[in-house]
Image (tube, rainbow, N blue to C red; front, side, top):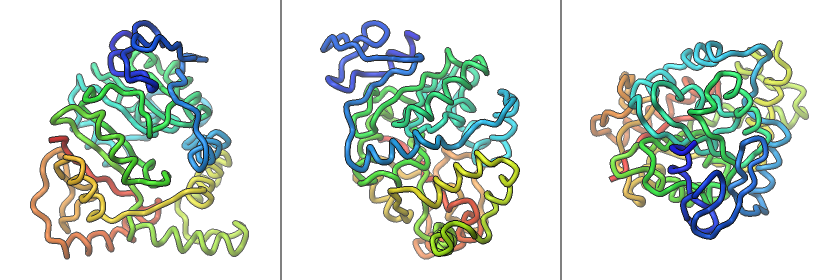
Length: 319
């Protein structure tokens, strides 16, 4: 617990925690029911709409009779998850911002790593914390309820800041990005997953059909097909992808402008925008890209990524 506390800061004053969830600066005691501290001010507007959306339907869910072996086996079906794990040192301090139900946080919690999982939705965090206890990872992972506009993280404390599937659901993704980068130490890595402007097109077309048929028919969605026998997980995907109250999509050129404006050196993308390349070292700088090749690669993602929502990852290093 002491190591975890040194990575966190009071969202009210930025002070360090003296003990448990009492701020040594302003003296405020933050409640922590079920071991999940509520380190957030009151939220309102569209942020509260999104919070309630995920509280009603946490995403993704856990199946009955799961285990740590199940989690790792399932995660490692993804080439991206494997190369991310391989790139992160065994003693890294990691924060996952917008961790949802915490599956990636729990997957990365191996060796001597310490992981903080942050999210706005307490319903999602409760599932992650329960899984951490089942898996025996509750000393390596701490879940925290917070708002990313006032993150309760010590500035420059983390080797890796991982944020995937989150910023495109905020009212101002560029401002949200500026908020999260401060948690990375100098030389630390930023791993950012967003809906791609081009790769999202197939799902947007499917969503138009779904709305016209009042969700009775959603054509060509492989995830819904795979989850036919899992009603709860199928419903979670349907809500997250087709009914979300706030959504944006982004090109790589836009994300690179965010990086440049916040002192982040561009490293690579996943998938690669170098046509025919597949990165094996996620944190190794990619070759200089040709802008036209980058656009062509992103258009190609409509086929390779469009079936599962069109999410792409951009990696940077804090200067």
